[in-house]
Amino acid sequence: MYVCLCHGVTDSEIREAADSGVSSMRQLGRELGVGTQCGRCACTAREILRENRSSDYMAMANMLAQPA
Ligand code: FES
Image 1 (spheres, rainbow, N blue to C red):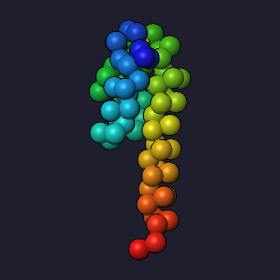
Image 2: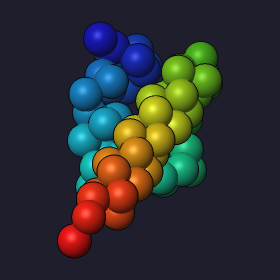
Image 3: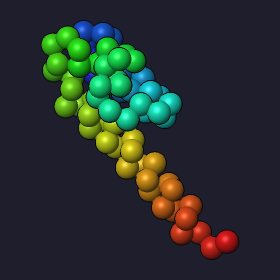
Image 4: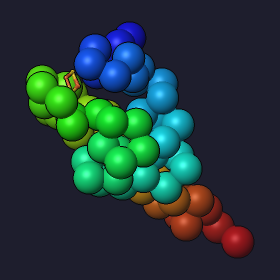
């Protein structure tokens, strides 16, 4: 699904960027241009970054909860 129409950026590309270490809207803007033109995509892009971070934390918490 396209999130940023101004720059033709999809949710998958935002998730890939997040997996590669992008963690803020500022970084996302620098990497993919998201939110740097009209700004309508900013809320959705921020939510995708937040979801990605949450799933990373859950994976880490599950890993730490495993008995050694
Ligand atoms: S839709 Fe992303 S900057 Fe316009």
